Image 1 (tube, rainbow, N blue to C red):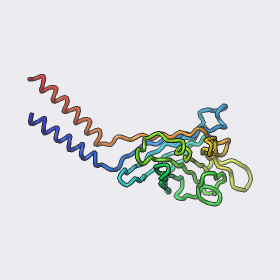
Image 2 (spheres, rainbow, N blue to C red):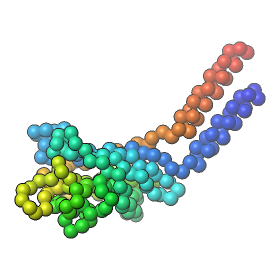
Image 3 (cartoon, rainbow, N blue to C red):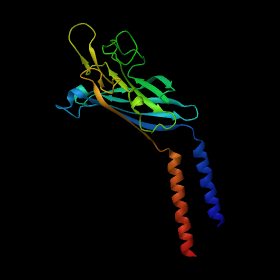
Image 4 (cartoon, helix red, strand yellow):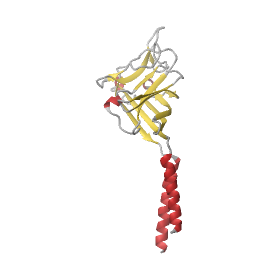
Length: 224
């Protein structure tokens, strides 16, 4: 019985340590349905897949990075987005709009910046994605208003359109105010985002310890 108490105490200590762990890592996937390909190539959607860290005590997101597929190539090419350069809290939406870039600058569109609605390239081979993170529960499904803030822009080779010497048109996607397809190439709609938690190492340790305790107790009862 003393051994059971000792093991149980160890598990409680581990659980307590896990409870105060304040940074968790999440997977995030966004799918931008490219309306232009709905009939000819319905699987040619623009897809962002990445990870980020979230601190619930400070309500901050860090280390967002991932890859953005290029629908115009049939998703055979990707752009790495490794620079999280913007994180803005929206009290009305209840979360953070976090943007990650291909280059170490927020200049994506002509004139500078990455405001939704831009279509022409800045000229520096940049791309970005904006995700939404609910600070109360990052894995919560998005509301219509939250979903309406998702956007991407790819102004790199493989996603540029146009001829001549002037700025080329980028592949872009967002939803209009009425929820319709926004962006170039007939726009994107629907847009989906899924966020899932990545189990931490101590979570697995706690689970294994619990299973071990259950097995130990079962063997002890059998012997008795």
